Length: 194
Image: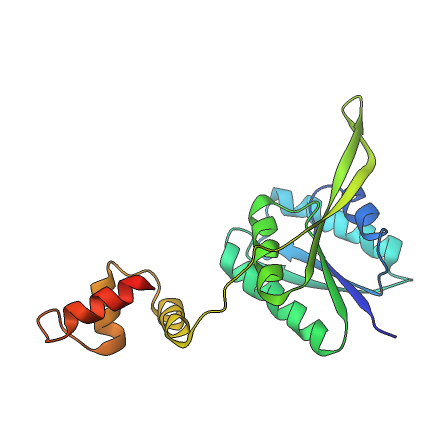
């Protein structure tokens, strides 16, 4: 039987997280928490404990810890977990219902590059009090164009070296060409296309 794994960034309310997840099959839950224990993270840890208490007997539960303020690093960590679960034959769903905006963006990016399903449970309120969820929506990824060999080379270079001050610096780093070298302007025009 194929397992369904839910990756859930934990926020401050359990309701949207758990009620959204209940709309789908689940066999394993991976809770995403912050690496740094600030005041908000203490609340998230308490919600995670509630989830473990409620679902620990019916589903396998794991935790991963990410940098909450670093969108790309968190996206990479989430994507790695998605890939690892998919490699084991599981279907992976990501529930961004209660996460911080930054982690919600990380989840979107991770799902866009892996093809995992992203969903959110929209909360229901009565007299300003959260009463449950009113709807669960899946969030389709934006269509991504496959990156070519040259684009991947550029992305790997930028990932390794970080932000660069200009295309010229990129050309010097990738091709070893100085600004005064023959063919530099042609290479600059070509690189600017990417």
